[in-house]
Length: 543
Ligand code: G16
Image (cartoon, rainbow, N blue to C red; front, side, top):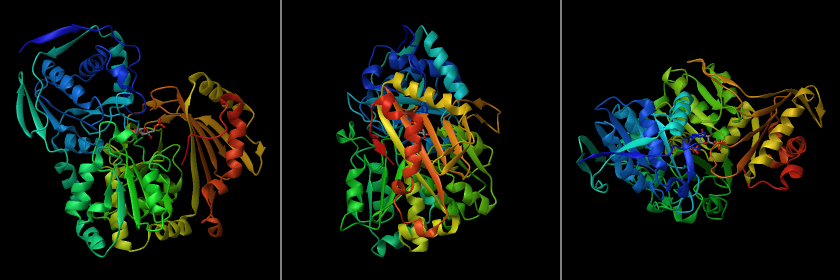
């Protein structure tokens, strides 16, 4: 078998976004495009000769082809061993688990997460470091620089590896171990959660519906919920992974997981509903006729963490991304533990977890997890809720209402405007920024502006600074409007407007968030001049 050195033109657009490089499949299919990025990763991270890396993806279209290319490039770049999930599959949290468990040097995760798949959809790739989490910005920036300058890459000339059979194969001097994609992860879940208590809950007739959205979590959900926890077989739906996710948009929110939402709001609704996304790191939690915002879910898991075996001795601290509501801050205060506010992007939690400063982290974008891995973890969040429900034997709604009674309600909503022309999105951001000099102390309806800024974060562990992380308009009563552009889209721009108002009055807790935030939404639309600049009169997605 020979190693070939192949010319590449270098690519100027391989800048990783919020979570790795995400592009249309067609972009990845261009000659040398994938290889250029992969070689840039190898050149940047300098894998020690003979080291082990992990490889897997969410099974979307182009996953198999990409795995074969990466394996051959790894062999040509001196990697000693690659652990690859059977059929090329590993959910993102499962890959994080495998990297940590086998003390690998790192791993490549193939996914465009919640973005649609298929030949016309998206593909993505990111590098995770030894702690199992996404590479920090200094590495992703260096990969981007390298990708522009790269002129050649190395690849082994060899036949494809059999990915469907468990076993160990040789590829040049490298070993490829095709591993069970589910077992290590399911074992970890069984260590953290009280499976006996959850089993007893199901045995008592508790009903749930988990929507895998034809994405990666189907086999994981089948193993954990049905085989290990004894839930009835119809507790999971859309559990067969498909390369195009059945034509759907595998994003677990009220818009895209509408099939599940209809069941949970229907006449025969089960007690509990949940969904996960393309690569299994996101989660949505529903009760009977009830939606739990991701921000509240994080706060409630933190407040009830000691119900869960893995956290029964308490949690060290919590962290949330800046746009996530301050609900968890209130829990942290009551527990007398630190609470960190980071930019959007799971990679910002890694240092805090490695330093032992935080146990739980979460984001408004349907991401919650703990230091058991270094990624957000959809099924872990579902199991947190199941474990809490098994201990408390209350409904989801009762648990949330009791939480609000104790801590007050951080009423929260996010409006997304997808597929905007980039120029319009930039114009809007510019328009808002220009008002920052005169906004402070202004009275806008019943809200008085306290301060405005573009969020900047200094990592408390390594001192690195990340600027321009989102525009914040902070009001005197603690309410906020946050405006930022998504870093995960592949075409055009997605504008996100986040709204938060604190409601201590228990008699108003049952009201709809859109109703409670009506005035703040009006202020945000006015400040941004959204309709005038973009022509849009309603958001694509409301959460
Ligand atoms: C990624 C990141 C998350 C982030 C989310 C949304 O999630 O890992 O940390 O909150 O994108 O980012 P944005 O608002 O920039 O689109 P995922 O599930 O896509 O990997």
